View (spheres, rainbow, N blue to C red):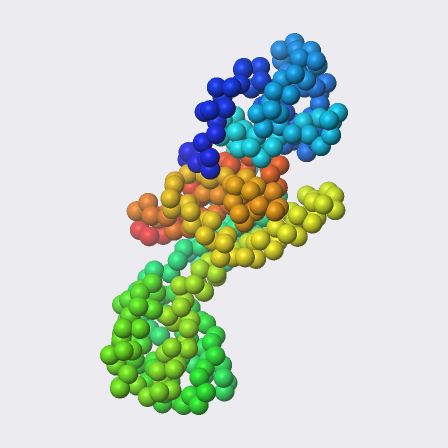
Length: 363
C-alpha cells in the first residue's frame, strides 16, 4: 500500500512521554471507541487488555492520557473517548491496516475495468461503489481537460441565451450555456466563432484566457462591437478553468451519513457537513493538495477549516496516469469515528486500480 501521509507529525514526540502500558491502554480505548461509538470505561479496559491490570491502575493511566490531551470525557465519572488530537496520534502511530477481502477487491475491479474510465459516467460509478463499500459519502475529483482545442462553435438558443460547444483533440465535447449580448446577429456570431477558432486551435483550456485577452487588444478593428462582446461574455470559453473545476467534483452517498447519525446533535452536524460539501471550491482545493504529497491523506476534524464545525474526517488518495502525473483524487467523508483500518486500504486500492486502467487506456 502507498505510504500514509499525516497532516501533523505528532506521534514521535508523544511516544517519548508514553510508557508501553499507556500505549496499550490508549490503543484499546481508541479501537473500542471506533467500533462502538461509546466512551470506554476502566472496567471494560481491564477485561480487554491482555496484561493483568487493576481498574485503579487503568484509571491512573487514563488520567495521564487525558493530561496529554489524547483522551477526553463527557463527565468526570464517565468513560473516555479519543480527542481529535488522540485520533491523529492513533492514525499516525497505531493504525493497523486490515487486509481487504477478495470480494471487495473484485467489486472494485469490476466496477472500473468493465467500462472506459475516462468517461464521466464511469467516474460516477466509482464514487457510488466507494460510498457503498465504506458506508460513507464519496468524493471523486475527475481529471482536468488538458487536450488541445480542436473547434469552438457558438449556437443561439434564444434572444438572450446561447450555447458554446468546445471540442478537444481527443474527441471530448464540452457544452456550456451562457448569456448572449444584446443585439447579437448571426453574422456577429460567425465572426466571433471564426476569431476564436483561429486563435485557440491547438491551445489548451488553461491558455484560453491569456490568449484571448492578448488577441482582442490587437484585433479589435477586425471584429464589430457585438462580436467583441460575444467573445468576452461567452465566459465559458475563457473562464472555463473555474467552471470546469466545479464540474470535476462528484459527490455520492450522502444518505449514508444520515443513516449513521443517531442523535439530533449528530443530524445537525450532518446538515452542516452537507453545506460544507456544497462549497465545491473549498473541497476541490483540499483534494488537489494531493499534488503536494503522494499517498493516502487523512484530515481529521478541524485540521481543515472546511470541516471545523462538523468534526468530520476525509480520507483520500490521488490517482495517476502512465507518466505518474496526478490526474485527480478519490476519497470518502464521514464522522471522525471512521473505521480507518478498513477504509484506508479500500480508498488506496481503488486509486491503484483507477491508475492502472487509465494507464492501460493510454497505450
